Length: 212
Image (cartoon, rainbow, N blue to C red; front, side, top):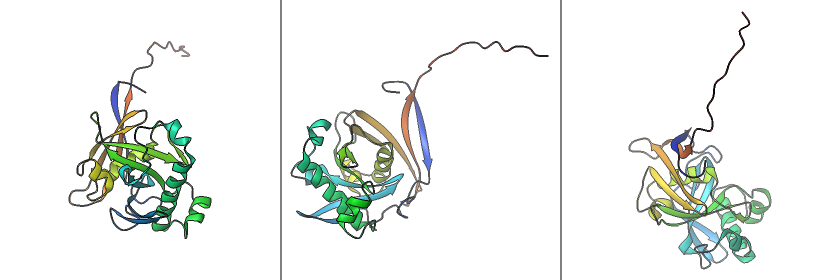
């Protein structure tokens, strides 16, 4: 439910590599992808769903301070985001080239721009899905962000000020909190959880008929 309420954590067990076969499909927490304007550093993580994370500050036309409607009205910006996403798909072995990635794999991986947090959040993000800026944050994106924040060296961990297993994510509609359980001394993600809220909707009495 939106707003305040009792916290309920929904956990997803052993979420890594379910789509591309490994937690870090490009073999490292961060690596270069070849975009039309040159090399851009990115973190590709497969946990719940594959996502590519790129620093907002690395783009000349950032998403900061612009509404979702404004972003979706900027065809040039969306085209550049798709170029980066497609390049990450090639780097992760999803497609042989960017044209194939755009035509045949429009959501593999998805892309999220990441920046430092504010107002109690650890990171600030803008997510994209199927060529458009997302109005909030896909649940799989929140979970994958949680995994990336727990891995030393990723751009998400760097934006959050260091690795952490509890991550508060600011997105266009508010703040989402996720938790990661990591095997000690490793990068093995045991579970990912998202904190939701619940409240009592109704109560009452039932009077069953006695058929005896």
